[in-house]
Image (cartoon, rainbow, N blue to C red; front, side, top):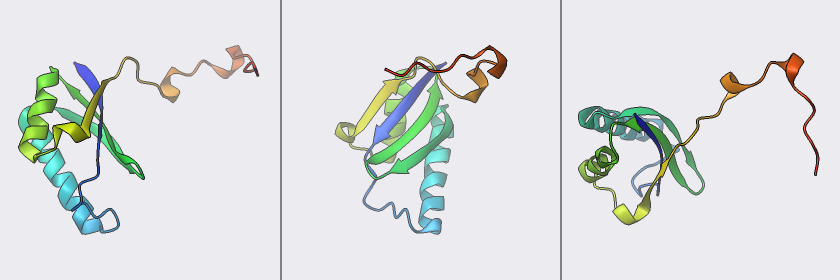
Length: 102
């Protein structure tokens, strides 16, 4: 499986302050990811766009997802995830040294 960080513009009709609108847009996303065989791990909306983590068998699946939802390809960037990071990778505290300050 390949994992991508998907970066795109917030659609003009996506009203982040309206819970019903957010629920509708996330339903469309979830259904379309399922339709194309992708696994949506979650995402965030920032002041500079939308970002999602998605796993797929091939990159073409992400292009099909975007096509089905009518994204502007010029406003979507796929970045291949090389290494997911999180607390599950943290070294045991008893083995860790203090960080170096440069």
